[in-house]
Amino acid sequence: MTTKIRYNIIIPLNRNDGTAQPGGLIHQTMDELVNACGGVSHHTETIHGVWAYENNIFRDHNNVLVVDVDDTPDMLDFFKMLKTILEERFEQTTVYIIRHKIEIL
Image 1: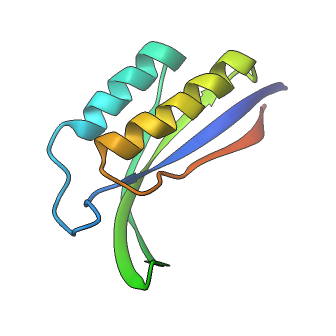
Image 2: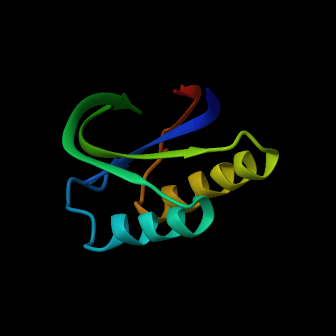
């Protein structure tokens, strides 16, 4: 068995004001992930979410990018940096990046 770290990146399809994200941002992000990590999977099914922030209700439509990498300090640093970049790129208060250990048979 091989142990890796999986990063699930929740990508918003709309900005907080409800307008669609500009075309190409997801592909730009995927290209960056391929360059840094060697590969990425894009789950294109829409994930619907509802959340509250500062007395406002937001309705989200998201996709998920999935990346499996070795568990190294450099990779953790990369994804911490990427979170800040994605929050600016997608004009979001926060972008969720979920990290967990996986075992590959």
